[in-house]
Length: 254
Image 1 (cartoon, rainbow, N blue to C red):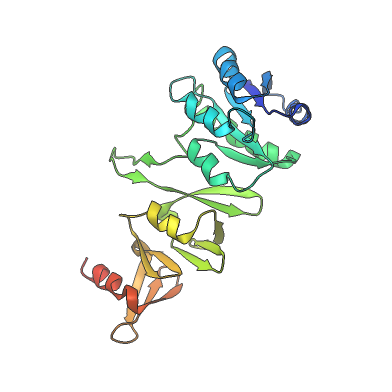
Image 2 (cartoon, rainbow, N blue to C red):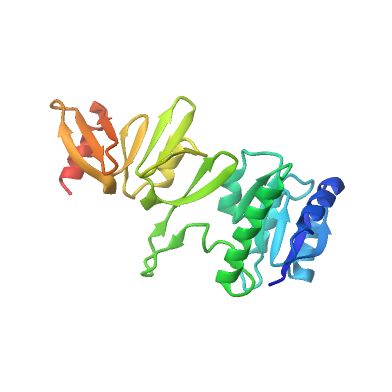
């Protein structure tokens, strides 16, 4: 399957380097290059690419604005963000990007991004619908309740997790760890922002430095009249602060 690809970057050298790397892939058909957000919108309309490699920092119109202005529809392309800045990963995924590459992009990392794009394109059976696997989506039963996606960082990779996969969030200094059944991954947001995003769901604050998924609580043991020990199904233990003892009462009351 030929992947019609557009390169968007305001730096000519960056475009040339990326074009050279992409030309190593047999399935990639480069349909053009754009040096600004406005030109990118025009070329997306005229060339109908399946995939767009998009720089974020451009004069006049940012890459984020390009993605937002595209909107929906059957000809919506996939976006892979290519940037020198790593602090915009969460915004890029929420805007609709399927991957986030840091300059200079290594060949192996680019191969992984292309494999992901190919999988989404095949699953979409034609031009991709960008957010189906990335943004908050309705559950399989058609419920209106949104399933939140959590962005985790592992080395240079960004992973998308569902809330069901996450057992707890734990803050350590300036870092926030995402705890799954077998791994600890770095979060891309503060604990407060994560709690706000997941409000109304199964995550409860049990300490100023911990947020746990009550669906994964296996045992609650009283330590005193106002202190409890929570044990998760992966045997990880958390002490509930006195201030958050009401959370345990809420769990016990069902």
